[in-house]
Image 1 (tube, rainbow, N blue to C red):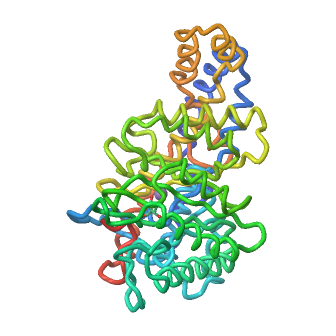
Image 2 (image 1 turned 180 degrees about the horizontal axis):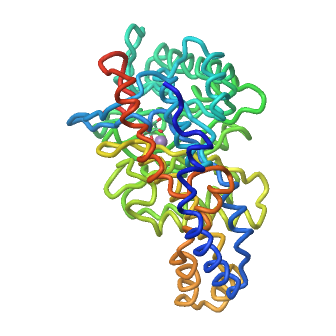
Length: 431
Ligand code: PSV
Ligand code: MN
């Protein structure tokens, strides 16, 4: 199937929207100038924003009650790369993919890398999977993987992670992301301290196998699939482990992995301050690890997270270089559309955070003027920066109106016809 979203087709679709965009952009530029803000600097920041798309996000996700795949689900990693390329062609902020092994284990890594490169994409992070059993594996992960009581199971899980690194090297990746489902379902099932010791012992072996220039991300999660306790349950434990492991180990914050109402922006600030914020899995949630589109439920929280990130960026905090990744599951939407929306919402939050008048904010903080401090944040948050996002995309060759251009391209119905289903495994997160 030929790739329908070329620079030329996107430019054609942009054309009738350009004069309105110019008008809106100029009007916003004048408004911002009155606030002492240079719109061009914000547009440049929007254009420089990057977030990696999860290979597993382009398939329909599911819950334990079922999965309802849509037409044209990618049947293999090559088709996933094609779908990711559509998101990048339209948004121009997603030139990276994070992969999940074994879901995406390529028979021919060189061919996969070549295809990604041809589409202008890089395969930057590999995620290991010891949270489910694979056909033919010697030991089960039912009672844990890297922290299992049986050393043979731990050795198998360590070996899998090292294999992920090997595959990642062939693909040009530079980071291994480790999330384990290990934990307990009932009080008394697991010895808290011993299981964490086993976690560290296993991770030290993985850390020792990291190639030069690689980073190790460890991802905490308070529950699920273990519903009483998990081994790497929170950011404090993650920070402790990352510090124990060494300079190349970092904490990864998945927004959905916290109890409802947790102050995630403060966790982000703490990890920045302690020099261990490695990156994010962005998504949104109402109740648990809902994996909803970024910014769909708590856009103000997303803005506040970016407020911390931008604050650190502007202050040039040493070693501050967090990886942005999406990790979401589309159950009822076209996954490509959801990922486009999420990527856009991240850029929006980033640009809005750059609009915060920091000198005023600090002054209000110094004077303990809580009302004005919040008002300063809100002034940035309520500014509609859509023309900046659209202008940044247009100048980079992307779509002024990505969703409209995507729908007009007919991509979904084309892949629906070109990818008969029924073979291979589904592409989305399993329920
Ligand atoms: C676990 O809930 C998680 O957030 C981890 O990042 C996994 O790798 C991913 O979801 C996919 O299931
Ligand atoms: Mn995650």
